[in-house]
Image (cartoon, rainbow, N blue to C red; front, side, top):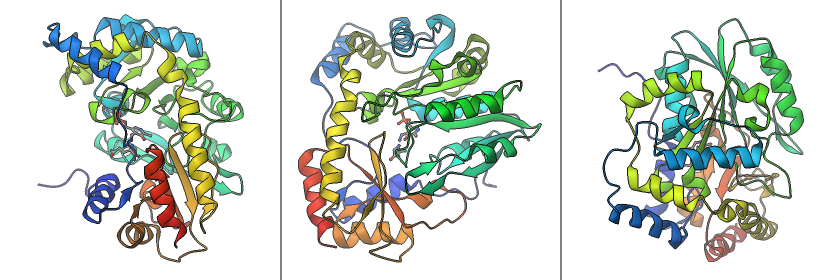
Length: 380
Ligand code: PMP
Ligand code: GLN
């Protein structure tokens, strides 16, 4: 068999989690909480199963859940989607991203991807026959920023789509209003689509607001907006999320979705629809994770790592160049095997080797897990 993805191996998240468990390291690598979700959410799903919601739901998702999603978006960001035609429930954000790319990108189309980029983006574009056009973020004293002029320069007559991700994995940076304005200037008067990965939409810190493209009708009208309940409700293993897009885009999205997975499991959709009636869990999320970020950052000040800004997501990047000259991949392996703390090399989010001496930690962990990791990191 000739591989369709010859350069792709096993994802870094699987590699590092496997090594972490082999070495009994504290796993601050792959992004997932080590604590349980709200028991009320489990009760809601289990009631849905007991009440007999166990057969195929409608292809695009359970209407009550699509309505809850549309209402949430309108309340928070002010953009009105039609729950019937514009919202599709997906098996996690990963499937939403792949499906959006598959339905929109034709062979030879260019898709602008900003690096570091989540590892599923480029393979998804390649599977669609598209051409990823990579532009790297700039790392400075204030952390990572997007060179919008370079992005404008990368646009050609073949540019089909620009992918954005805010809050951003792995850097923890968030798009500002100025970033959004720059993006608007680039796409205005073109037919370029936006694929906006907003899975960490409810994890923005220090009172900042999440600049969802749904706050900006000019962008939302040409965008697929992707989110994940796995992140928001601490249930990464449930693999459920959604894609919001105007009816014409959603119609094409659903053509692929229906032959990719057809639909997403019923009881979890009913359970989440009910649980979403209470906005408190997502409204409280920034404070919940900001406290963990602050605890972890305070502890890291007692180590030789240099902290980069962490404005959103549950990730935090550190510069280890004062500690070691190993490559990021080798440093992450050494840290896991010898120090007992797993991390993710940021180089895994780039297509071509790029060494900046930075690794990513996930702080979606119990305080005691973070404390144990900090004790180990302080010994380096
Ligand atoms: N996009 C980004 C930026 C992510 O960090 C993740 C999860 N790790 C995903 C998409 C995928 O989310 P899901 O688990 O819902 O497929
Ligand atoms: N998004 C998670 C991360 O960045 C991992 C998801 C996965 O393992 N595919 O760590």
